[in-house]
Amino acid sequence: MKRFGVSLEEELLCKLDELVEHHSFPNRSQAIRFLIRRYITEDNWANNQPVSGCLVLVYDHHRTDVQKQLTAIQHDYHDLVLCSQHVHLDHDNCIETITLKGRADRIRTLSDRLLAVKGIIHGELVMSVIR
Ligand code: NI
Image (cartoon, rainbow, N blue to C red):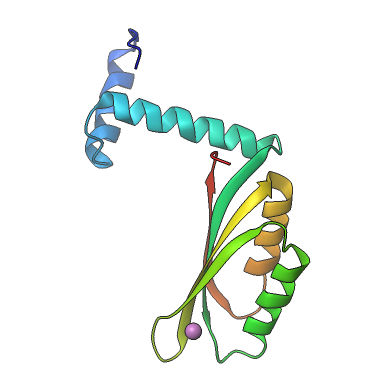
């Protein structure tokens, strides 16, 4: 671990402390680490680097063909899919988490296709820089 000094305007420092408080970071250093990694992650995704991510999908399994379509699409991108987990939330609803690794643009395309399936109630791609 290396230490370095940072000069910040009073107002920006107050904003940093608000972030620390609001997101329950243990200290300013951890908040800054988090922000740097988030920035690198966004950069890697924007520059189509190899990345990893996790797509979360919530859907009503009674809707015609939802599951069939999700499976068919994932088979088209089988090289990106590390694993998927299906949990039955209640009588109607399922939550599926799909862990992905590969080039950012292909992961985005796959995620967009899965999210666009009719019957998906909610979904979100969580992006990571670790690959
Ligand atoms: Ni289910």
